[in-house]
Amino acid sequence: MRYLDVNYEDKEKAKEFGARWNPKEGKWGFEKEEDAQKFLDWKENQKTKVDVSYEDREKAKEFGARWNPKKKKWEFEKEEDAQKFLDWKKNQKNKGEKYYIHKKFAINLDGIVADICIDKGMKGFIFKKLREAYKITEKDKKVSINSLKVVMPYLDFKYLLDKDKENPFNLTKDSKKVFVISSEEVKSDSYEERLRLKRNREFLENLTYYIKKTYGNGKTVKEQNFEDNIEIYPLKYHSFPKDYEANEKNYFSLHSKIYLINEKYAFIGSANLTKQGLKTNYETLFFVNGNIEQNKELIKKLNKFFCDIKEEQRIKKIEFEDNIFNYGKSEKNNIEVTQDIEKNKTEIENDKSLLEKIKALFRV
Image (cartoon, rainbow, N blue to C red; front, side):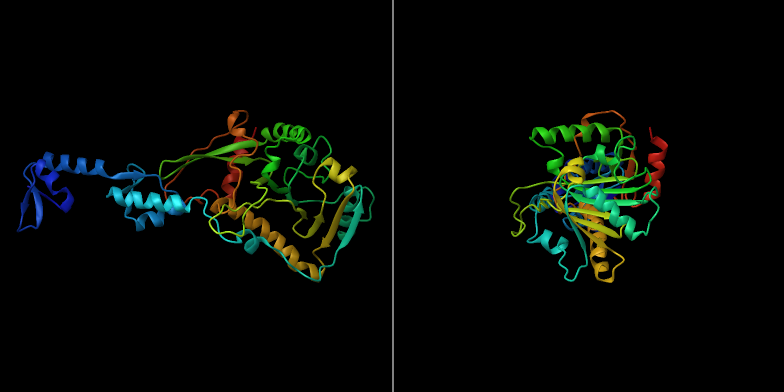
């Protein structure tokens, strides 16, 4: 005789499998082991299996979900509990927060000390100020740029990064490169912009690889990455985002032009990182030297800005493009690494040394 706990709702089904109530044991008894197993198998099949993201697992538990390690799925005993979770999830999807962009990313500071240039040839102004900041007097000595972090609607990656061409900032493979761009740079209808996007796509495709992640709930995601220390965060663009309304999607609608060099020197103004922006257009740039006491708070906030943007792509409170230039359609130079993650989604994301080893292993 095998005794099992049987829910009130399942007692009739248990009887069909031969169970009888035993008042002394306070449980339902099955004469045959195979009948008890048939009931358990039936019960298992009645559970509702739901894909639950890492961020939602605690909420799923509140609705009664339990993790099944064998099936690698979250299961609900009751269909209505699963539906309650799905209803909650639906209400959370793309749920915005009133003034979210303003509250988290606004920078308002007085008393900044800055130099200004309103002219053509911004590249000359940039390197003049950097040479002054680093006290470089030798004519042929180059400024060493170990880190370039950029907020910019439009970029010409080939012009900026191609080591065999212009490469105006003398960037090397080891230089840290972070680009926060508008999704208008990912897809555009303008003929001139489409030409630039084509150059960007062809140049970056050879530096693109993917890490294929399989999470504990069975969901598989291809995460886009770039070689040569390149990070790109494409913010989705919206002409009239309603940041001031609650429960609206949060669109950054990027238009600022900011260069942060070596995490200490900032250039802020109108010039995009294109050949026209740095050479031929009549532009405006302010130079902010982070060594000056009045400027240290601004440089600190700009560094934090880039950290916060990176975190935003993980928590998804701001709308991002999933893949840049739709490289997922091409298999050229794509590298897939399968990572089974059951408990901690950030396990591989936070292990930078592991990522570097993976990239070095599969570099083409």
